[in-house]
Amino acid sequence: MDGAEVTKVEASALGGRPLRAFDFVMAAFVTVLLLSNVIGAGKVATLDLPVVGSVPFGAGLLFFPVSYVIGDVLTEVYGYARARRCIWAGFAAMLFMALMATIVVALPPDPAWPGQAAYEQVFGQVPRIVLASIAAFWAGEFVNSYVLARMKVWTQGRHLWARTTGSTLAGQGIDSLIFYPLAFLGVWETGTLIEVLLIQWALKVAWEALLTPVTYAVVGWLKRREGIDVYDRTTDFTPFRARA
Image (cartoon, rainbow, N blue to C red; front, side, top):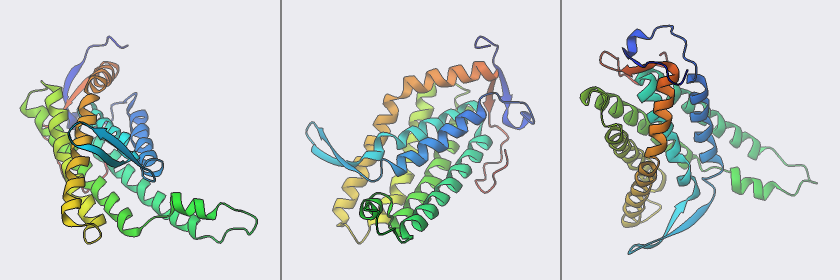
């Protein structure tokens, strides 16, 4: 089946056509999103860069951009509407995760259980940062998907690398512009906030650019498996709906 013919179709013409791998890609998107926030967000690591020197960064930086890569794959293979559905699924999952973490941390621990302090350190959440993270994800992912879908039509499906890079620059830029001021304005000095914002944006874009060969391989395999190449020429790009 991997050698099947690929047909160019309008996103609106997919209708009820069965999609063999969409559910798995959607599950991967939500899984990477949640794990990068749960496992990666709690640790600050350092990276030694030439000229710049030692740069602190949240460990989630290693994996959060992968959600953008999967978002690129979703839009490129299945179209904006189905990517939009996945973004809303991820948004709902993040809200539930934040609610669950808040409730579980607040539950009084059994006197014989010694792990409350460690549990609070890992899963305790500052409401401002949680709000900033969720808002930045929502806006950044929609911008990423919109730009990629539009560029695909403009380029007539050529130059995937340019579409993934352009959409990442825009999406990660919006993500960073929302997250850092919402989370840290008034807490950090303005100069520090701007410096961290720009460095994190550059690192995220560079990391996703390094993953471009992986994106090409996955996109090509999925298109052959599904037998479609979707274009969003007549798509309604409103983000405020979850139906594909």
